[in-house]
Image (tube, rainbow, N blue to C red; front, side, top):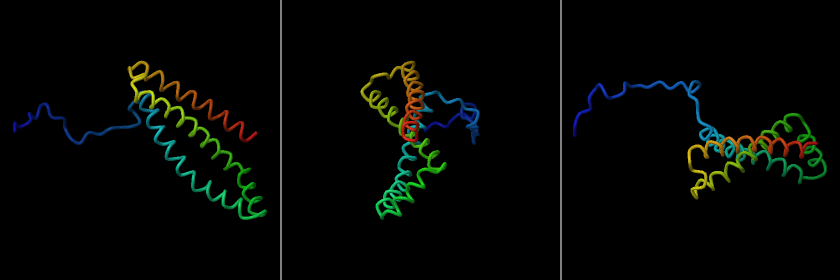
Length: 132
């Protein structure tokens, strides 16, 4: 096995400042897709608790209603609506990419930007429809 030339081997350790790296839209959409999936899984715990509370009787139902009308619940609802919308549209985008539709770099970039824009608009629309 040949030895590596010390002039071509990068010096270690390499420090990466993640605040200065400019990710392409495709990377941002991919990371957001994963984060939104985790957020929706984590939201199942409080949703299950609220559902159980609402089925426990009239007082539990009233308490669940009080919890859901508070400002923290509205903000959580906004976050979940945005997460659901982005995750849905990004999932469709990845299904199309899996069958080689939109795989070219320019098209993938445009579709990632489209997913992020439509996801925000649809999430805000969903939240507005649920809470007004």
